[in-house]
Image 1 (cartoon, rainbow, N blue to C red):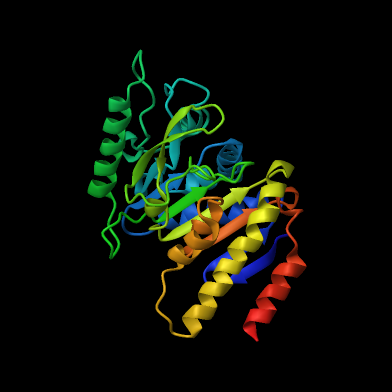
Image 2: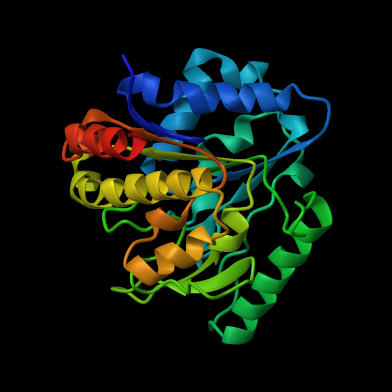
Length: 291
C-alpha cells in the first residue's frame, strides 16, 4: 500500500514498496505512448531502472506500450564504452531494450568513451552533439528550453541525481548538457543540467534502499520548506525567483532542493529509503504555514 507523506502544489512525496513503487511510472509510460504525438522520456541509471523494466516485462505492460511513439534519452552517462557494465544505456539495452519493439532511431544514448585516450575535446564534442539533438527533436517551452515529457531520476546515497553531485554541481550554468566528474573517483561523465531537467513537463524520482535514508532524512525537510515558502510568497503576490532564494540559503550543498520546484514532480520512496523522514515535522510545518 502506498501513502502520501507530503504534498504541496504540484509536488508529492509518496512512500510505497515492491511493485507499488514502480507501477505509477510504468503507467505514465503506457499513457504517454498512447498519445497522438511522439513523447520524449529521459531515464536514469542504477539498479532501480532495471526493476522498472523488469516490472514492465512481467506485468505485460512492455507489450502494451507503443514504444515507437516514445523517444528514450538518458539523464547522464559514464564515459565508458557501451559494452561496459558501467554504461547506463549499454546495460539497459542488453537486458531489456534489445527485446522491445522500438525503432533504433527512437533511442538517443549519450555516447561513451570510444577513443584510446580521453580528451576534453571529445567530451566537449559530445556535449555539443547532445545539445543539438535535443534542440532538433524536442519541442521547447516558453523559455526556449527543450521540454521532456517525463524525466525519471534516481537518487544517490550522497544525494546526487543525474551526475549532479552535492557541493560540486554548477548552479550558474545555462548549458543543457555538461561535463561532470565523480567527486571521489574523478570518473568523467556527461550529465543533463538543472536547467534542462527543470524544463520537463513532469519529473519523477524513484529511490529505494536503506542507503538513501540518511540523505533523504536530511534533504526532504529542506525541499518541503522551500515548497511551502514558495507557496506562501505566491499567495502574497510577490515577485520572486525561488531558485535565487534557494541558492542564497543552500548554495550547492544539496541538489534535490533545486529539482522540480516549478514542474509536476513526484518522489516515490520505499519504506527503507523513507525511514528517516520525520513525517510529523513535515505535517506540522505545513499546518503552521497554512494558518
